[in-house]
Image 1: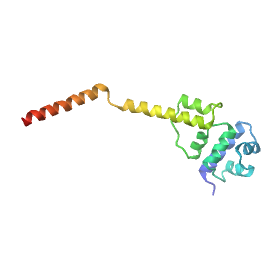
Image 2: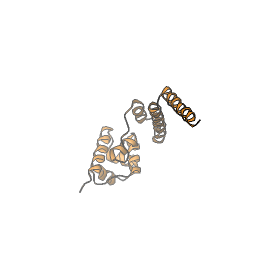
Image 3: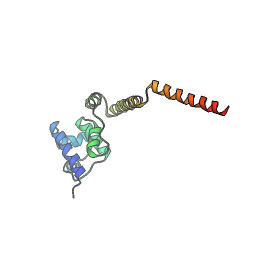
Image 4: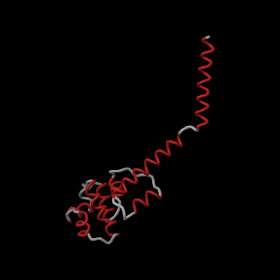
Length: 142
């Protein structure tokens, strides 16, 4: 029985290869995998490892992340123009793209955390309330 995920990634690789006008033999050489193995991947008979997907992505001059998401190895990240531009860039390496995406993601998480923090005025009000309760407790003890 053919695995649905393997078939999906295989047909996606085939469509990307055809769109790039690269033959099966050329891609197998560029990716460093055998011609029969690549053919089996494209037909959904084999599910490639993350390493093989990275090699195929390199051969197709595309982001490995796209193939990882398609294969179910990674979760889809939110879309953004900055992310799309990085992934589409052909000048930097896959490793450099990943480092820049990690930095970008950390900035996004940091900004989200700041947005979710209460405003400074709210924190000052809560501190004032806490100080007032301490004063009240002190008055009751004396």
